[in-house]
Length: 314
Image (cartoon, rainbow, N blue to C red; front, side, top):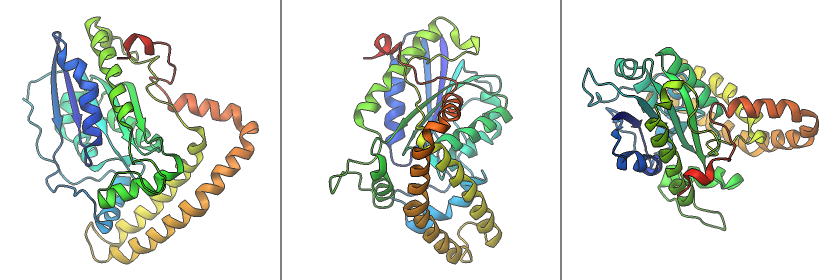
C-alpha cells in the first residue's frame, strides 16, 4: 500500500476541482492510501478579493513572507511515499498559504527526502513562481520529480477576464471573450496524471527519482511570455521592496504607494507587454535556438511530449 499526500490551497475553487480530478484515480486504487489536505490561513483570504487587499498581498508574495496558516491535521510520525503539492500563482510567485506551508516545520518533516509532484493552475505566467518553488523545496530537502501546469486558454483576453473574476467573482464570458480560468475539459483531462501516478506507484517508480509523467503533455511553455515574465518579476521585486519599506500589510502608509503602483502596472500591461511581445516576434528567427533552450529548461522535469497520452487518457 502506497501512501500519497496532496496539499493544496484554492481561493476560487478552481484548483480544488483540478485536485479532485487528478486525485480520483488514486483514491479509487486499492493499492493507494490517499490523504488530501486543504491549507487554511489563520486570516482567510476573501473571494472575491477587494482591490486594496488584493494588491496589499503583493509585497509579501514576492518576498515569500506569508501570514500563518492553521496547523495541519497530520500525525507527527506519518510518512508518505509521494507528495502532490498544488498551488496557485499570485504575482508571479507561489500563493501565500502554500509558501507558509513550505516554510513550516511540518513541511520539512513531511517532504524531506520525499518525491514531490507540483501542480499549478493559473492564468498563463508561472515560470518565476516555479523557480521559487524549486528553491523552497530544495531548502527542506524535497525532491521535485514532476510538474503539471494547467493554464487559461483565453490569450490576451485574460488581462480582462481574470481580474474581473478575482475582484467580482464573475467568471462567465462576456463581450465575446471566453470564461475565465482553466477549461472544464482540461480539468477533467487532468485525471490522466492520476492514472499515470497510480501505475507508477504500483511499480515502485517513485523511488527512482525520475519523472513519472513524461509523455503526458504535463507542461508546455509559451516562449512568447518568457521575457515578459522575467522583466515583470524584476519590476515586482523593486516595487515590493519599496512597499515593504513604507509600511506593514494593512498599513495606511502603503495605500498611496499602492495606488501609484496600480497605475504603473496598468501602463505596463497596456504598453510594455505588447511591445515586448512584438519585439520577441520580430526577433524570434534570430533567437530561436536560445528560446528553445529556455523552453526545454522551464518544461523540466515532466516535459511537453505527448507519446503516452493514448495510454492514460480517459
